[in-house]
Length: 296
Ligand SMILES: Nc1ncnc2c1ncn2[C@@H]1O[C@H](COP(=O)(O)OP(=O)(O)O)[C@@H](O)[C@H]1O
Ligand SMILES: [Mg+2]
Image (tube, rainbow, N blue to C red; front, side, top):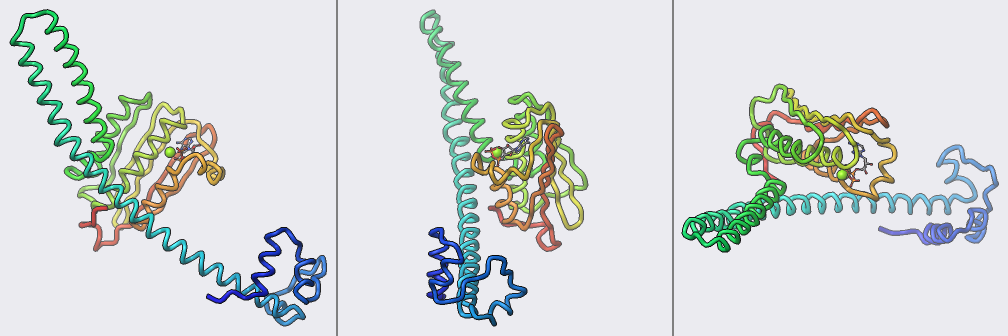
């Protein structure tokens, strides 16, 4: 796309801190009056500075087109990254479950056999220690696999996976979580289930990290053409208008929007300081995609 020389020189000079009253005369046009506010772009184009204004408008249009193209590329890349990330998580979770956890279970069984085969106190003491260490490692490997990608999500669906997650969560954090369901009789498309699971995971992680809440409620609600999931807590709340600054600290809510965008959904934040937070994710379900979905 052509960039006008006038526009480029003007933009560079303005970026270097010069005022319009210096830049415009330097380009050979009349200086704008201090309080000059054009009535309409047409008036600008017709005045003595017409070519200058046309150059700037031209550059503005080029800039907007470039940024639209850049945004589309970023969205495409973000969708590829999220999708690759999910595939990798699934792969690692399966390896951990099928290989590492199986190997640790075999070690536990053999240690039990070793324990039965001796009366030597020192050996028995060492075997006992080894069993505890191995059981601890097995527990962490299982937890890691579940956090990466719970098999229940693929095998049983969103609601059982969320219930199991809420159960583990309530045992880990001092927050009791309930999961309620309305109108959801069948499974949702696989990509929608995965996105909604990740949204709840991120929202509840935020409750644990930031809210100092005592309870949280997850409500999954299916209507004819839409599924919504809301996550409510009774914690400290925050000002959603402060989020652009809070982005510096994390990408959780940004990630929710990106993931939901991939399935045509959106997220809404409602929060007031000291009155808790509600996050609502909404995904449209046109009839043709309500039954089968592409897994991310
Ligand atoms: N449930 C919540 N209660 C209180 N504050 C929250 C809650 N969820 C999000 N926030 C606020 O929004 C900010 C942005 O959240 P997020 O994008 O997930 O980033 P991160 O968790 O890494 O800080 C948090 O830093 C926190 O200030
Ligand atoms: Mg977060």
